[in-house]
Amino acid sequence: MPASSFLETPIEFLKGVGPQRGEVLRGELGIATFGDLLLHVPFRYVDRSRFHTVREASPDLPNVQLRGVLGDLRTVGEKRGRRLVARLTDDTGSIELVWFKGIRWLQGSLKPGQEYIAFGKVNEFRGKLSLPHPELELAATYQAGL
Image 1 (cartoon, rainbow, N blue to C red):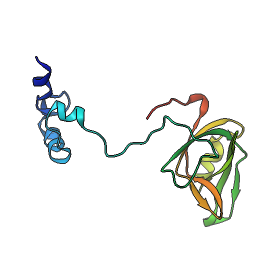
Image 2: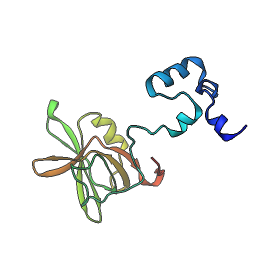
Image 3: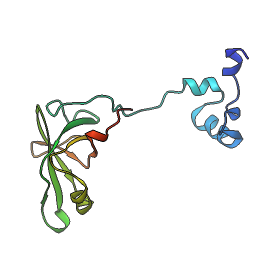
Image 4: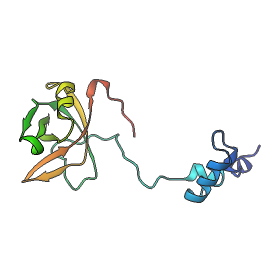
């Protein structure tokens, strides 16, 4: 089968698609053929292949991925205003990590003194940078990717 006719094959013939999904792909994304699927570019994606330093972290960036050592956990505030706070430190500085929910679970799960990968949106509050509710992963188990 020549490449051009393969690329013109209706999307319904792709294993796992079928007529119903084919209609959805055609109607919502304009994907009618194998070729259309290959040329389809996502509207947005999250690039997790790059690490920023704490010094580079800025609220202007859509997201940052940082690698550093997690400092001691402490609970701040009372009742409804309660939050868990820790610092993530690398060679260029440190940033505050903040959680408002799941405090008890996080206290039992996180290991101060270990190296972590933190991913999220940087905020500025009262002149200080923070990373609220970051996704965290132990650096030892981290696998790079998009």
